Image (cartoon, rainbow, N blue to C red; front, side, top):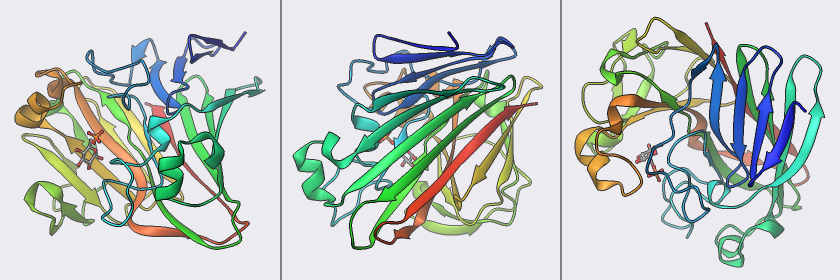
Length: 281
Ligand code: BG6
């Protein structure tokens, strides 16, 4: 079987040898192995029992990014904190394709009160020899328009974050959350990490390259998502997180494709599709 379920996790296997795992909690991709190398970081301290969003992998932030004063939802919304329904294998030709679903009736009443809209999210994970695609389709099942933010909070595994580089952000404006939200324009062709980094880059081109630092590269291609967040907690924030090892900041970098700087507006009855394709090169 190219995909099977065990212990609330879906295991995908492609004939080329590439593999992936998706937890039903948050429909969080928790592993992607391509060319025999694990590309995704999950903390050794991550809670995998559904008590907390998984610290690592590709959590989905929806319907908010961060916290919002007027929307009483936990940071980054409810999609990463709830069990999704496994909708099964869609096709197993060249790609192994599995689908997950989340709708408003599956989330707790408290969250529905905080964001009172009817919606249907379908998340599709497609695995091929060199790529993993993570795309979602959102349907507004209300008659009225609603607004949301969303982000694929991808944690990449790197051998030494100070040797990693993100290429393709030059000349983008960014909000620096480490500097009280001050705005800057990126001057560097390659963004490097040498301290805490928490930046929301706006209107980013669709194709970025993560130079992992061991000679390999991952192309991050987003689709219908405007922004990219780059995050590494560095020393003090790492120590402050209960579900993250003190030294693990050295082995991860988050490059997160999303639409978070402005609300996405979706009219009643309409659908919206967006996602990313990660490819090893
Ligand atoms: C990033 C945010 O996307 O997620 C950071 O920009 C935040 O500000 C980080 O610290 C992790 O968030 P959380 O809720 O998973 O601890």
